[in-house]
Length: 599
Image (cartoon, rainbow, N blue to C red; front, side, top):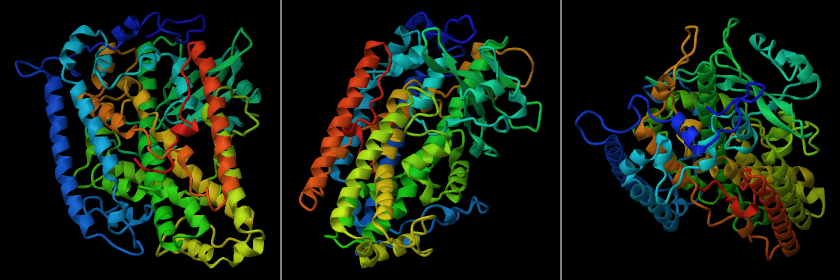
């Protein structure tokens, strides 16, 4: 762990070596030699290569299916119930495409680039045993020639302030919310204090925030793994310099009516406190990967993609405006359904604590509460207590700050196109293509998208609908996908699975107990490999969009001028951060935003 400051909160580690020594393997579970057999890393790589071979055969089967794919309109279909999970209503997931039109296949250049990254990762691991012997930190050793483990996170991951920074600048900045009423706080956490202030005081001063993982409540982890539905309280710590930062107040892992253990900084069980943070990070991984990224990002965008393909003729302006933001989505989703969440080859059962069945149950819960009318970027932030004016008082929430810059640019771009195409509201209401699109999207036998407009009667309603779709397909997916390598490369920072629960016995645990709970090498390889593959830079970033260059040239040029200015603003901010020794937040630079859910 890092050193302790005067308040008992973990501060920066004194050196990388100290941070590395804290995570050195204690019981041999995660690496090194196993008896007289080959090194475990070789076994793990052999297993990974066998998995790739299995995927190759699956890909060949997919190609045979696609060769018989549909032409013309894409038919919608519901998921079928899995006979092994008869009580799980998979038919309530977002609609999917029945078959895959050959033109929706992932382009060869993308497949080749992904395979190139696979081989770069494999080549990077040939001397892993040597690196393990020379590196005091076991998990740092996985960084090789083409892939690196983020050194800042590897050094500071145990620190409370780094844990909190990642809630607003990390891989999943969508959970944190403001606390406005003490009734939001579980009873066992209401006695917490920080900087001489009670929970009630912090709420009154607008300094209290919460991460609530209630959507995982009731999840039964996959065999041999553990997963909680934690509640994490963080507060705005006021610094002597006059600034502020987020810091940890406490973590509750269980949700009993009463008598829940609350883990807090400065306690006499520091290892349990660290383990609570690791379990909270593991819970966040489940919600990020299965609900935010897969469920609402990939699967949730599929009915939008199919409805667009079916409803818009080739030369309709609105159809052309949307087209780049649906590119490759059906192809990548088709592949994911038959690999990562397949019921016949379920990689996620072996990798994530939730497993496929429980993960899909959580996605069903999230989709059951989905309402398109509440999905705009400002509306989603407002629901968590944040706004563009930053009245919440939270500094350095770069997802919010940069997100509003890009949202406003998209909204203005769409408004320019709509106003140019439909001078009056009456023309919007009279467009038969827009009527057909609304019907295709809302019909229970077709798109069946909850909350999607049944009709468009005015320009502004159309603008908000289009801006919301474009933002989610491009910006929202990108901020959930492209930070994966940085934040997941050092596995203790965001473990996809944990293999031991928090002990209920009084007293502290030792570091070996924590070490033995962390994923073995096979899972480490999987997390790093797939993070590396899935963060392949897009060849169609938001700045490459040119579909309105001829139809609405003024809108096109203004949009790209705005994007260029946004990019420069963020780069200037990031340069200042780096000069202060802080990590940059690069994910909403428009050059880094993929136009669609394409990988």
